[in-house]
Each structure stands twice: as C-alpha cells, then as structure tokens.
Image (cartoon, rainbow, N blue to C red; front, side, top):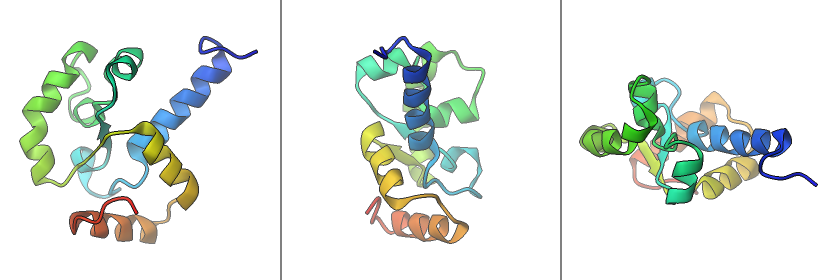
Length: 122
C-alpha cells in the first residue's frame, strides 16, 4: 500500500504542486506574473518548505525556504500591481487544470485577459 513516504506518492503530490503553481499563468509576462503563489494551510507550507510562496521563489531563488513567507509579504504590493496570481488551494487549481486540459497559447491569452478583468478561474 503506497504511503506518503513512497516515491510514487511523492511524485504524484509533486506533480499536483507543479501544475497548480504554473497552469494558466501568463507565459510571456516574466517570472513574477508567470507563476502562482498558493496561500495554503501551514501543514502544506511546512511539508513543501514554503515553496507554495512560489512567486518569491522564482524571483529570488536564493532566499531560504524559511524566509519565503516574509518575502511574499514584502512583494505583495508588486504582486498586486502586476496582477500576479495568488490562489488559496492547490486542489482547486489542479482540478481546474484537469477539467480544462492542456493549455494552448490561445487558451492562455484568453484566460489571462479574463483574469485581468477580474473574472478569474471559471
């Protein structure tokens, strides 16, 4: 029986995390807007060493994991200004990605135009 410690479980959970942090982000908008931060629960943050604060990780990869939450707080005005994506749930974003399917350039442009208008994931 697979456990959280088995390689297969880790690979699956890592895939969910990767998809959730990158799916539907504007591909041509640079590192800040081109990824997503997910404000999740503290257990998830601990398990992944705060990598859910993914925007900060992309912009400042040398910042240690224990400072990523503080970095996010400091970057928040710029995150908002650039309409970077901050979501609350890995599961919701991953589920949306599985329903919507693989991205195309046209889908990505459409999704991010809607997001800038305040429509978000729909």
